[in-house]
Structures are given as structure tokens and as C-alpha cells.
Image 1 (cartoon, rainbow, N blue to C red):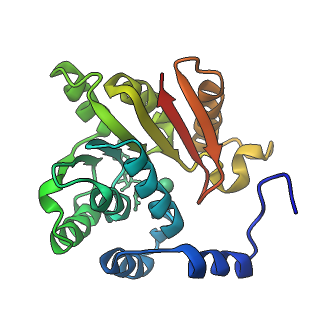
Image 2: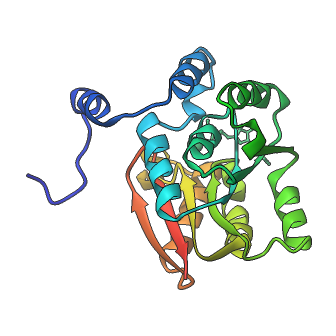
Length: 220
Ligand code: SAH
Ligand code: CA
């Protein structure tokens, strides 16, 4: 027994997957295809995708926002968990990886639920705010460039309805956030974001050690 979050050995992680993972066949295929790429570590873990599907369903989300699409795994997981009239606005700047994403969204039959905006996400978020999008989103997943995490969070909070949920990926940053010898820009940005979220009185929060660390913030 342990009264702290358990570390996962390879063996225990395999057990967890074998005894809990429910992965759509096209999510599994996308994970295989993406694994061939040198940057495949950017993709979320499959158990994290399943956890986010549960969060989406718990919040009754219909309007979702994703910041950082890559080859489309997280957006596909979220879209598959949405009701028929659900929608994901997906932000990225990479035409090549998002072409793979689009292919899988189409094959999974959810392409009408996902709208891709190929532009720097801050621009897209500012456009949404300028066109009356405040207080209208149910669920936001932040997983793009780490230097902008705090900016993405502020704008996402404004776009979120009361009771809506923001999930922020990579907040444990493979342990580097806790290593005083590491002080690169990305690590510092994630530390700054974690500090900011810790005592943000406008949300309730939890830092869940799933995947690379997933911070949750529910707008009060
Ligand atoms: N959520 C994805 C992984 C995202 S990886 C998954 O589950 O697979 C991070 C992504 O952020 C990359 O695709 C990168 O192109 C994108 N990105 C980086 N800077 C960005 C910016 N300024 N605006 C939007 N997207 C950005
Ligand atoms: Ca990530």
C-alpha cells in the first residue's frame, strides 16, 4: 500500500494498459503510425486519451478547444467522446502533421466535428475572444509550445464557461520541473505556469500524474 501517487514500473504500466485501456482501432493505428516519427514523444499517452474522454463526458462538454494538434490523437480521442453535435476547434501551425490528423479524423467519421485552424494559437484565441467567444467553451486542452502556456491559460479561462474545464499537458515535464539544474526556457515556462495555477482563486485544480503530468482547472 502507498499513500502517495505510485510510480509505474514497465510491468505495472503494461498491466494498467492490459486491464483498462479501451482504444478505438483508429486511435491505436494513429499511435502506431506516429511512433515511426522522430518527434513521436509529443503524442499523449493512450491512457491519458481515455482519461480525457472521461473528463469530456463528465463535464457534458460540447464545445471544445485544442491548442496543439500534432498528428491528431488527442483531438480524435476528444471528438470520439463528444455527442453528435459536439465540436472541437483545433489549433496548430504545422500543415504536415495536421494532414495526418485530418486523414484519421475523416476515417473515424468525425471530421465534421473538428475544425482545424492553421495559425499561431494566440492569434486564433484572440480572434475567438474578439468575436464574442468568451464564456462559451466547455473543455480546453493546452498542449502546444510551452513558452506560451501562461498566455494560453489566460485566454482559455476567458473563453471557458463557468464550470468548464481546462487540461494542461506536460506539467511534470519528464521530471525536469523539479530538477534545479535544468533552467531552459521551456522548463522555466512550465514552472511559472504551475506556480500561477497553484493559487489561482478563479479555478479549482488538481495536478494529475497521468502521462507527463496533466493539470486540471475548473472555472468557478
Ligand atoms: N496534442 C497532440 C500533441 C501536440 S504536440 C497529440 O495528442 O498528439 C505540440 C503541437 O503544438 C505541435 O504539433 C506544434 O506544431 C504545435 N505548436 C507549436 N507552436 C504552436 C503555436 N504557436 N500555435 C499553435 N500550435 C503550435
Ligand atoms: Ca504534450
